[in-house]
Length: 316
Image (cartoon, rainbow, N blue to C red; front, side):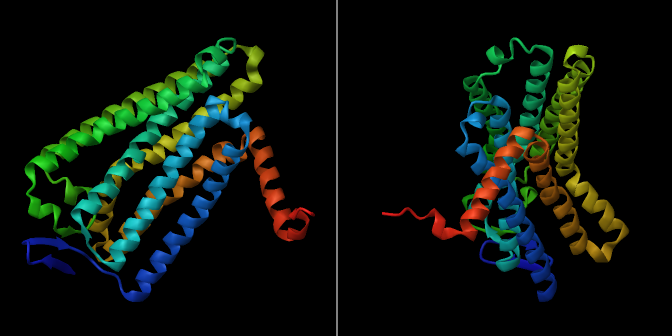
C-alpha cells in the first residue's frame, strides 16, 4: 500500500498486514520487549542497590551495556507499534527516535571492546588492575564512548538540516533511517565509519583474547573464565554486526520470496533487534557468581514480600 502526503508532495511506500496479522506481530514484539526489559531492569535495580557493584568498573561497564539494550529494544518496539497504528510519523519525531537509537547501537560494540580490555588488564596485570581500572576512569571512558557515538551521527543530522527543506521536516514518512537521511554521501560515510568501528573492535577482541590465552598458569582458572567472557563479547559483537547487513538480508530473502516481504522484515527484525538483547543478562546476570548471588537474594526477598505482605509492615 502506498500512502501519500499530498499537501507536501512527499510519498512514502508503506506495506500493511491484515488486522489479525498486525495484532499477532505486535503482541509478540511487545511481550518480548516487556519480558527482556523486565529482566534487564531487575539487573539494573540489583546493581543500584548494592555498593559492591557500584565500585567495580566491570559491573559499571556491564550495566552501561544493559541500559543501551533497554534503550534499543524500547525504541525498536515503539517505532514498530507506531508504524502499525499511524503508519507514518512526523519527520522531526522520527529523527529524535532514530538518533537516540543510533547512539545506543554505536555504544554497544565500543563498550564490548572496553570490557574486553578490562578483562585483559585484570588477568595480565592483576597488581596494577586497581590502579588502571578505577571507577572515575570508567565513567570517563563511558563519556568518551558517548562522545564518539555523537560525532558519528552528528554529520548525518547536520547534512539533513542543511540540504532538506523545512517542508520535509513537517512531513510524514515511514520511520526508517534511509527515509530521513537521504543524501547518498551519508550512506557511504556510514559504511566507512561502521567498518572502521568494527575493525578496531574486532582487533581489540582478538588481541585481548590471545593475550589472555597465553596468560600465566598461576591464574589458569581466572584466565579460562576471562577467555570465555571475551568469546561471549565476540558473539555479542557478531550479533551487533548483523544490524549492518539488515537491509542486505531483507533484500536477498525478498528476492527469493517476493510474496513474503512483510514476514521476512518482521522475522529479521526480531532476530537482529530483539533476541540479541537476551545475551547481556546471560553474560553477567547468570554466569557471574557475585551478581547471581545478589540477584537471587533480591528475587527471593521480593517473592517473600509478595507472599507475606503483612510481615513487611512495621508494628507501632
